[in-house]
Length: 261
Image 1 (spheres, rainbow, N blue to C red):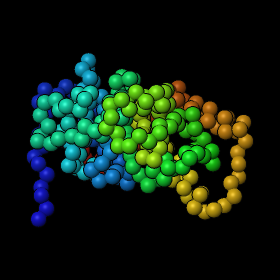
Image 2: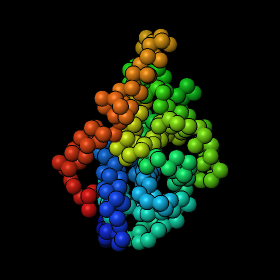
Image 3: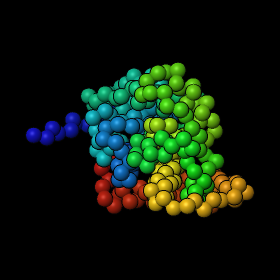
Image 4: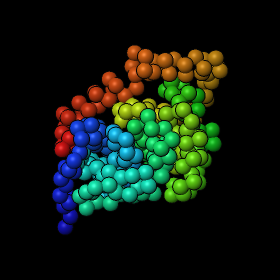
């Protein structure tokens, strides 16, 4: 017989700013599920809680991504210890190691999103990583960094290496593991992942075809990469995580608004 979810109540003493962040993060979990990027109970999306404390929101361990609501998200500190009422749920602190490194080193980065998709893992296993095959890879070319695999991410000293490898980029290929994106907003991290995942899928589709590669000149690679940064930058005509993220949330709301509770 199926076991019902534990009753979830809105945490007490949650500021309006924190509640808004909870709703945004719950929407992100739901969209990751809707896109097929989730991995059962594995992987995480974390968000910094507004305020002076180093507190973060993470998924309750045991909930599928399509079950997560704003109230069910668990507040933790930088070491993964639970703050306040978690509605009886725990978290997977080992999964927060990579995220906490980013949050602590770059407080302006509100969100970190990690996936184990077929396409992302497939490309992460390739020696050359993302290839300059098409516009889809090139428009994110200057945002991609790489971190070598060190086993399951549970060693705290790996935090510094993750941050060093990420640098000022927004997309990180975790070699032999998966993908990670970061953003100053939750919407930015999600849209970066949308582009990252799409680039990986298109690369694998091309490689499976076995066709000859129509190589692109270095000058065109550089030009297209610069265009991608300009178009999607804060002053561009489509800043990452703004217009697109609002459209994604409208998609969610047409089907189910329960993530907002």
